[in-house]
Length: 278
Image (cartoon, rainbow, N blue to C red; front, side, top):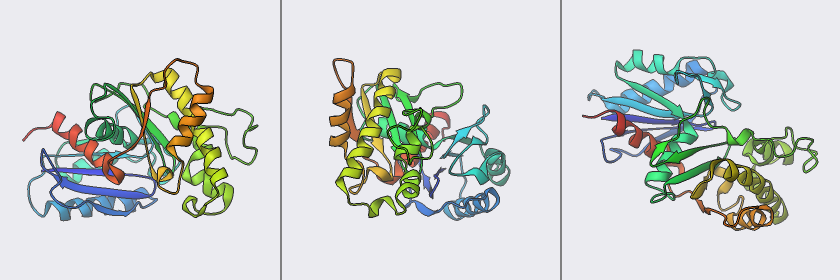
């Protein structure tokens, strides 16, 4: 049995699986903002899912930049209370099994590349537009190597805030993330029904995609996250704005993620069965 988890800035998802599939419906809870409370919730859920059965390995993702050893968060705007605490050590001590930790968006990208919207493509870029903005590059069904992780959400798209004087920051996350939109408009994103707002956000996202394509040269871009729901940033509008600024002959295919809220769990499953066997 594997235990798989996905710790996002808003929700924590945990499930038990064999090598092929989930064994139960994933458990979904609100992510505690402090590490102590969060790790206790995670350990309790793991214990309930295992119910005394042997665990082969634990694999999962967490929202933020990991340290070089991939044992803890080095930086996380949405989970600052978890930064600097050894997540891997805490889980190893509690379970006595191997634990692997990855960035949450990288695992969602892996899931989408193998089983979701990017299946069949060699170079897949995944971008999540949610509480924050993250992403990863998947090549040949493997999370690409990096020195410090992938942070496409922190690319600067407007150095002096000319495009958005009311935005608190100048990077892509400050322009299109759910957290940024709630601060800017004083309401939850799903409460906004002004098409002009969503079209402007599509334009901002297109600027980020243009840079990302130029750097990562993907076959396909898969976009997921809460900001891409039915009330959210429309993919056709993103394509429209991207076409107006793109400098190369062909724009890569852009698709909405297909694995909904469980992409990170699927990615963790593929990662676990690649590294651990039983």
